[in-house]
Length: 431
Ligand code: ATP
Ligand code: MG
Image (cartoon, rainbow, N blue to C red; front, top):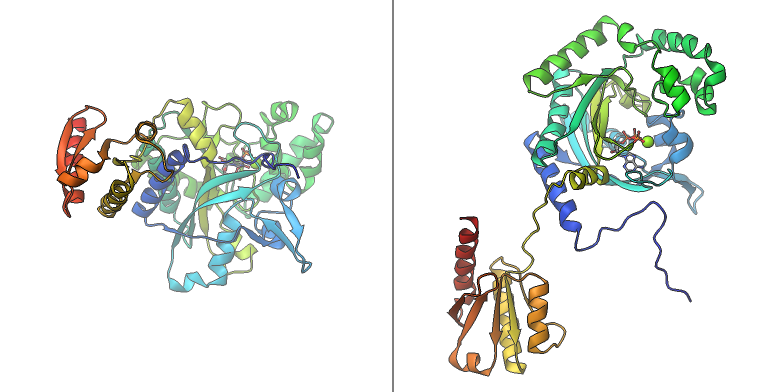
């Protein structure tokens, strides 16, 4: 039998040597979300296909072309989640969360699946941090969720992300806009791509952000939604801008942002980077006031967004933003001979119990190989235990950076004494 060494196209592994980068970004996301009053929500990786058809929208690229859908052995059609919002909304309804008070503020860190053409920044399994806020129509909420994204980017020290915002109206004003779009694009029918021709009747707003160059050129002169907004949508948009200004968040109004999913109303926005080529949208979202109703619930204005973690890490890489490597080993204890090894094992455990990472030999190596390994894993201190050390109940701990030796007694206070030595060295490094 052949060895299986190939992962599925469009998927990525996160290896032990690089997972700290993910953890760093995810921890900041969790902390900032908590600061803004959002709690984590976890939903299943697959849902009834019907949920996405209704929640994401039957005419969207995601539903028409990108979903991983299959029949189970029981004959049920299920789909791997292509995004997080529909599942979150389903859970909110299923567990009657609105009864527990509004707004509901939730976030998720999750994998998503889309059958797309893999390229830099575009995968078939990718990861999102997403935020959902249910039960508020206030423009303050729009500004709040955008501020949360902005705080995350600030803490990650990302520099060149531009916020672009737009309003795509509501069921009251959008039909007139759609009519105007149909009229405009119908006059250019011969020049449109097949995809746009199909969508012209059902979902003409999608033609505005078609990436095919000839369509893109035509879309440049298309009518602007901002000329069609009803009073309520216009006022909402003005207030969102006002609150963003108050929060000190810079933005640009871009009337061509319409977003790929059907459920959006009023505010839509994207954070875009110039640093990673054409897959530059790191975060996208907006309001979806009609979604909960679409899924069978009562009218409940809501909003949210998702950011792609792979794209975020790409931007950080590109900008040379250094992610601090966590301390992997504070003390390596090498033991020579059976009794010393047993003592080393005991001391390693006591240091671990005190909360510092410690390691000893688990392979059966000789002293030289053990010290080489200690160096390789970046141990801050090392200690060698042999018969002499056991007899004298003392051993020298070596600071691997400075070479300095400190003698410690091998008694029940060893871990405490090592911890203070370790802390003193940390302070020296900071000074
Ligand atoms: P795009 O226009 O790039 O296809 P989208 O509008 O389909 O993006 P959303 O559904 O809004 O994207 O998802 C939110 C974020 O998730 C995106 O801004 C992006 O950072 C990330 N994302 C979406 N699709 C992928 C993918 N296939 N691979 C990696 N990241 C993705
Ligand atoms: Mg897409």
